[in-house]
Length: 332
Image 1 (cartoon, helix red, strand yellow):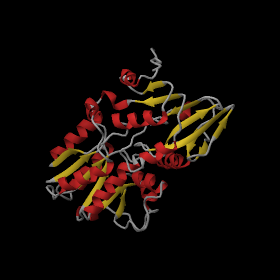
Image 2 (cartoon, rainbow, N blue to C red):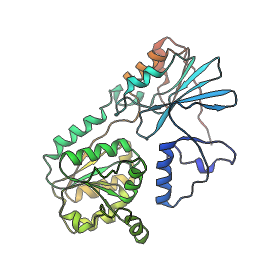
Image 3 (cartoon, one colour):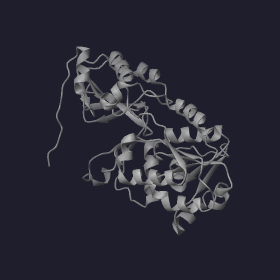
């Protein structure tokens, strides 16, 4: 929602462009939540240039915690601008392969979200999260819960790999299943995936799409599993706890730490702790760390840097490249 949550409110006639795979995720989420998509976007794929007026925009797929993210190379035939959007190098995509495609540019519009976080620590690799989790699970013979955004497909893959590596069923609620179906993850080869419902009649009808994968609370209570959860599932979790003990269980909190200050998440984590579940933070950023930004700047050799999405734009001044600041704060 922080990326596209306001698209339905755009005035009609304004063209919208979105990656094909990203839009399939939007459609799956909208179908589940029964929210109408009020726009018809132009769909694009990597390296397929888009012409808008006298500008040509070429999308370069990049790694981010939102699937199907892109950088955009914008040119009028004389000058070029690279807009990074949100990106990182610590996921499963090959960052060097992306850098090899990018040319030198006249201006770089670059994010710097992490430049005020944790004294510029390098991000943990996504795959390293699996190793960390596996080392923790050995100390907790009870159930395993995993809390992340279903739209963070990369992290859902991490969760599945943890479950698979520990010979546990990977449990998706219907919403997560619809998202992962949209990107082709729930293949027949992954026969240790099960889908459960937390709602009423509408969800029951939807669950019938998964005849060989659907699972109920009684069967879950007798299984070794890793369950993907979120705060809205509290009632379901409570009913499951009536059928089984959660003692010596562990919940991997795999989101930005700052969200823990929100009442709904804080209260939910406190509730899980009261059931005997240990909370362990298992997260890595979806935004570029210092080394990642540095490699990009050195590769594209921009004539100008325009920082966005950062509270520390002065960090870029060390490159002896003109830094142009734009204050886009809106006072209402």
